[in-house]
Amino acid sequence: MSAALQLLKREMAIAWGRGGGLLVTSGFFAGATLLLPLASGPEPERLAQIAPGAAWTVLALSALLGLERLFERDFEDGALDLMAHAGLALEFTCALKCLGHWLATGAPLALLAPVAAIALGASPTLAPLLFACALAGGLAFAFTGGIGAALSLGARRGGLLTAVIVLPLFVPPVIFGGGALDAFTAGLPWRAGVALLGAYAAAAVALGPLAMAAACRNALS
Amino acid sequence: MTQALAFLYNPHRFMAFSAWAAPLFGALALALAAAGLWLGFTAPEDYQQGDTVRIMFIHVPAAWLGLFVYVCLGGASFLSLVFRQALADAAARAAAPIGAVFTALALATGSLWGKPMWGAWWVWDARLTSVLVLFLFYLAYMALRASIDDEAKGARAAAILALVGLINVPVVHWSVEWWNTLHQGRTVFAAGGSRAATVFLVPLLLMSLSYMSAFGALWLVRIRGEVWRRRAAAAEARLAR
Image 1 (cartoon, chains in turn green, purple):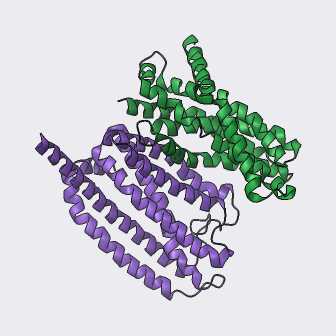
Image 2 (cartoon, rainbow over the protein chains, first blue to last red):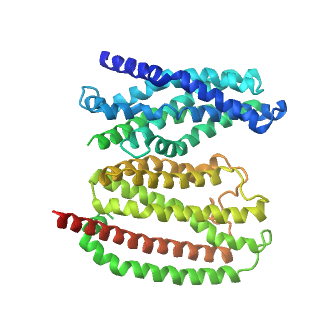
Image 3 (spheres, rainbow over the protein chains, first blue to last red):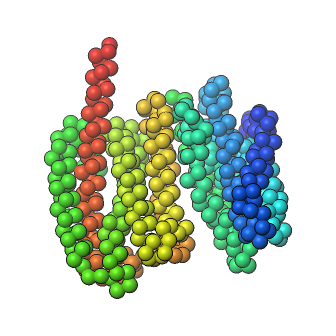
C-alpha cells in the first residue's frame, strides 16, 4: 500500500511541478475562455446562452494538455520499465498515474470551470452542478486520455496523435455533461445526464487501465 | 465458424481461396447493384419525399457497412491481439480504409439528403454525430498505425485502439433510442415488422447485399495485397543478408 501511496505522491508532484504544471493548464483554460467572447461578440444575452457549454468544452480541451507527459517521460528515461517489473501490477500503476494526474490538474480545473461560466454570464445557480460535472468529467477525461497517451508511446508526433485518438473518446462525456447543464438551465430534469456521465467515468476508471497497461507493455516489448 | 477461421489462418490456403472468391464477390456486387439500382430508379416517388427518397438506396447501406466494417476490424484486431495471427492483422489493416470510405459516403449522401428534407446540410443530431465519431475512429486507427515505425508494435497498438473503439459501435447503434431528436427513428427493423413499403424495401435490401459483396471483394483483394507486400519485404530482407 505504501508503494502505491509513494507512486501517487510522485505522480502528483510531477503533474504539479514539471514544466509549470497547473499554472500552465490554468493559463490555457483562461486563454481559451478569453478567446470566446472576442470571437463571438460581447453581447451578454448571446454569451450567457453558450456560457456553460463553452466552459465545458474548454475544460475538455484543457484535459488534453498534460496527457503527453503522463507516460512519455517515464518511457524515455526508463522509469516505466522499472514500474512494469515492480511489485505493483502495471494496470494498477497506470490507474495511479491517471489518478495523480487528475488530482493535480483535473480537480483544480473543476473549480475554475464555474468561474469561467459565470464570467461568461451563466447563472451562479449553475455553479454546483458544473463543478460536479467537471469533477466526474475530469476523471473520465484523465482515464480515457491515458489510453491515448499510452498508445502513442514511441510514435512520431506523439502529442498530436494523442489528441486525435482521445478526442473521439471524449464525445460521450461531453454530450452527457453538456446535456445535464443544458437541461438544468432550461429547468428540465437533469439527473439522467449526470448519472450517465458518472457511469462513463466509472467505466473509464475500470476499463481504461487494462488498455493502458496493454499499450505500455507493447511499447516496452 | 472457428473451423472456417482456422482454415483461413493458413496464408497458402487463404491465397488459394481468395483467388477465386474475390472476383466472385465482385461480380455478385455488380449484378446486385445493377438490379438494385434498376428497381430503385423505377420505384414510384415517395408521397412525402418525392424523388429524393432514392438517395436512401445509396445512403442507408453505406451507413450499415460503415458499422459492419468496424465490427470486422474489431474482430480481426481481437484475433491478432489475443492469438497473434498475422493474417488477422493484415485483415484489420486492410479493412480500415474501406470502412472509412463507406462512413464518409454515408456522411456525404446523408448531407445531400438532409438538405432537401430537413433544409440543412448538417444537423447535430445524435446519430449523425455518432457516425462522424465512427469516422474519426477510423482516422485515429489509421493515424496511429502510420505513425509508429516498428510495424509489429504499431499493429498491436492499433489493435488495442480498435477494441477500445468497439465500445463506440453500440453507442452509434442505440443512440437512436437514447437521444432521438431530428433524425427519423428505426423503420426497417422496427418492432412489429418493417414500416417501409415493399417497393422501397426490395431495392434497399439488394443494394445492401451488393455493398456487402463489394466489401467482401475489396477486403479480400486488399488482404492479398498485404500478404504480397509482406512476402516481398521478407524476400528483400533475405536478399540483404
